[in-house]
Length: 254
Image 1: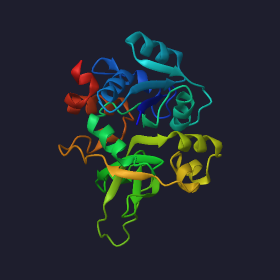
Image 2: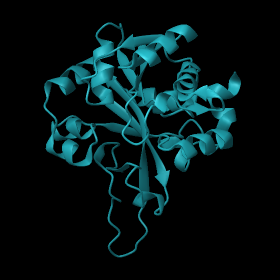
Image 3: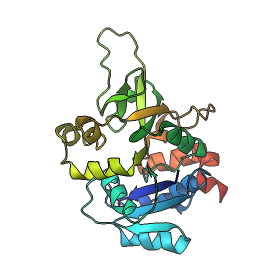
């Protein structure tokens, strides 16, 4: 099985402009993400897929593999698909470009999901009820067999009778087979996808299961619980996450 990671990096981030090039510990975030993902021994290649000539040239100067993709890509999955057209691989791992605290254990957990019959896999981890109120943190509810039932920016499940349900945070990691990527781009944006601005809902609305795994099945030391594992949305979060967890990051080993 040839597994290749593709890191979609868009320069015009909605929540924070130029996010991939923002500095954490003195280095652009995209460098930290690339080095962190590259630390996994299970990946045959790691490629940054970007619509930015600036990011592309920076990656090339660092010796990172990079692909220049269209500005018309509306989601990270679209960008991964475009880059994958010129890359040999059986499984394509999408690590979002704001995950500088990626560990090899995350990649191992994700690839463990991808049994021969599985088309799409992802990671989640428990979260607090307080964090579940944040619309920038994506929640996921699942069935007992390992299928994701729904993803939302709203706190799901709704705790009507204050029973204290488990809340699950969706993390910015996916694995796809090539056929799943090909189907994704053939479909139009789905209604739920447009409402939530969550591209993974396109798979669910078209009947493709997304299988999940606990991100920490391979890592019980608590990495990523809380803000740091769900992507870095603000400059303050970038600095705080990195300073708290820098020994777990690709940049921490430079």
